[in-house]
Length: 331
Ligand code: ADP
Ligand code: DP6
Ligand code: CO
Image 1: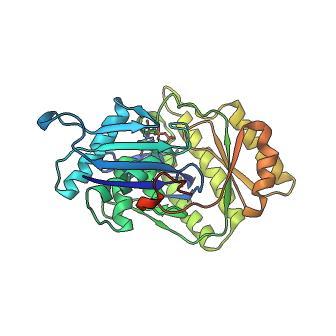
Image 2: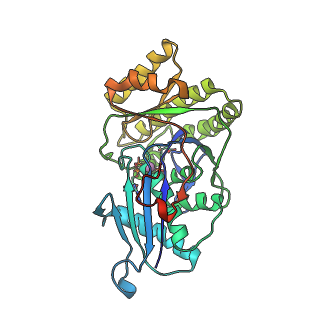
Image 3: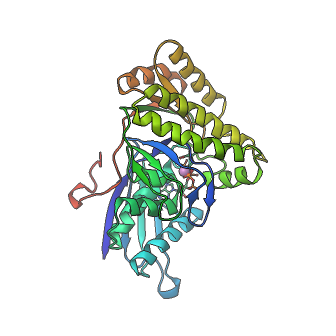
């Protein structure tokens, strides 16, 4: 019986991915840029054991945080494993056991760490020897944001065709993040569905695509120049543009609540006081603050009354764990 365990971390987009050009192939409408976290790892074990049931009835099994999953999240895992099996020339079902340390479905990128860990573990368990680029392309099919959790660090995910749409590391200045968790519960509408509704109904969506395409270029220039200030300004602006675009959908979707906005205000106040900090938020109420590494503790202290704060450095790439590492803390 073949099995492998992998660990991957969430990433927070500095320039967001919001919208697919091709849902089947999970090709994004624009490029995006992210910073991988060194907190909140997901650890996933894939065992190619036939899954549950026999013959035509065989199904994959999926356990998340100790609970057997049998809803849409299982279907998503099964469909993903079907792609892996196709690449491996196998028809054997598997058992997947995953532990998220990040809240699931709360806008803190559980689908990124989750599918990056699953792609890495499943590829190893089914005996595929994929390059980092091909592993990133594979993770993309599970969740778009997972594409960028394969390289970790500061990464760009290229828009493009199936071959060309992968993430890779880019040079960037030292950066840190402070995660301000306001609500760890699952969001009312998942990213995938919210993206579809935005594309179908938000009149701002075409402008989002045009402007973000340009913003990715500006962000790559700022990263290459090591210009932290510019990176921060672009990050906060792009996040607000994404939320404005989402709020333009019908029926409207609003991920940010009053407490989220209070964090954006507090971050602006920090800047007015001379500390460089910039706020962003993915599809959920939780806010993530980009800082210089030397400022992260002060920023965490300043925001501690507004939510649960956790400091993060720039995280590692997804990787398979050696047998002696399994069961111990992957960090
Ligand atoms: P988030 O903001 O947490 O990324 P999404 O709506 O994008 O929220 O994705 C949440 C979905 O991602 C879950 O409902 C589940 O389908 C999937 N997911 C989360 N964690 C894992 C995991 N560890 N393994 C497989 N799938 C996962
Ligand atoms: C707001 O990657 O979760 O976090 O591809 O449908 O799984 P699917 O969506 P997902 O969307 C992430 C959206 C975002 C921005 C980002 O991470 O770039
Ligand atoms: Co997600």
